[in-house]
Length: 289
Image (cartoon, rainbow, N blue to C red; front, side):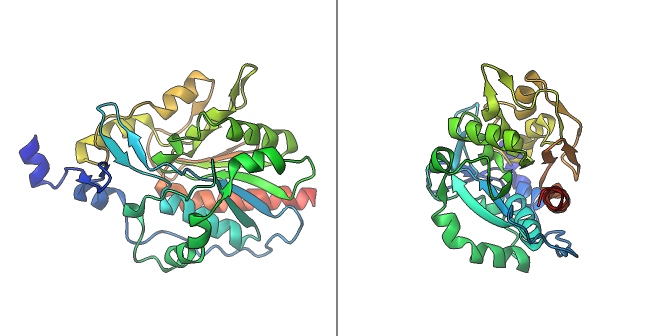
């Protein structure tokens, strides 16, 4: 197996902090230097007062796999970037938070180096990503019934599984968003963070249908060196146990809206998810302006 991994360049790459990023083969198969961004044109961008989106990002970098090896992760730049572009072009402003206000962790190995739109976005937001707001402070001081927020957005990347699914502040924010009629947007592994909405009274999204990165695909990725070992836990398995139905079988462009929850299946869905999120918010805010 070691010889084959070397021959096909399928061995994960060690990082300076003792973790592993995906192998050259996995990078070639799983990422791209460009995106399918459609330009984000909207005939009538939103101009009302409910024009803010709270983007909740992970600040944690390394995921310890079931075999003890660490995967260098964070938020996926395409899964974060393309929805941001769509939402901003549709007239919404994005406030970035992490659990404690520490810098946003980003999977830089997945950055599309030849995509001018994404590159500009990350240059423009570099200071914000380095110095985001605090989710804890938001949960304590900013949640009100009369809010300027239209949605909560949880981007993907395996990093969404770190520090968010059991975060009490995120649980409060998700329940607040649900109670006040905000939309919740979650892409790829982002729905893992919805687990924060579990309480003694039940799970907020029990009975919902979603699209999400399938466990079956996560179980295959160590074979090409995308992950350095088996996952520590499985997103779909945990959500299914709480009454959520996953409607996609593949890591594809699938997107879905169930009530006020908008989800997408994978990095391939990032553009379609961004457009669906933006058009859904435009319909919602127009109706409630």
